[in-house]
Image (tube, rainbow, N blue to C red; front, side):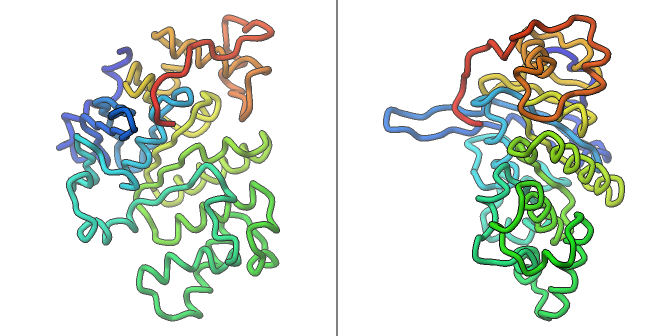
Length: 303
């Protein structure tokens, strides 16, 4: 595994700057023929206010890690230390009060929104769950959040099917921010959007991080998106970490063949389905061929 010295080892979780430390995480899926290991002893850490990307091809286990961090999945082994508390070991009763500190922006901006609720109601719902009983105050705060993510006041009473994909994702971001989380997990949050809309959403996420100091875990398969939003990166293959380091260093000179294949796919316009890595493309020393999609074969079971 390369660039290991660049990213802090999770064993240093006692460091005051470390906010989230994932240590030897294992996630298994039961199948009719036995257990399949989707995440195999993965470790990484991110400081408070930092932004770490977890990248890999489809099936590498990155979305499984995201679901484990927010405890939509229970790990088979390992620790998920959030500000000194092991989320992996907590029963639901003790986990529930902490859920407001960890929120997720999902890949599908339509499927993750309740279709029968208005944008205002969707964003106000987490406030109700958090105990804010005053309906007028809930609506006021929800309207403020929707305004912050760039939606006009005319959108407040519209339902998800009346919005574009980018607008739906903005609603999802506003909903995630309603509980004032310390950690935001973005699971392929821009992959379903057009390139220009992706850039707008990434700009919004950068602005929010600068304003609030929120910590990001960014799940992505495209290195161009990673270059735009993260300071550090962990590369997954078949549920295991194969490379880690500062994002700029890994993208400029990837050491592992698998990471180089991901990089070639990001640099090839015919393989891009998302934001083009503008800076990386401009500084690339090796021009990609006319058709150089990711050549490594899919492995693992998680996404």
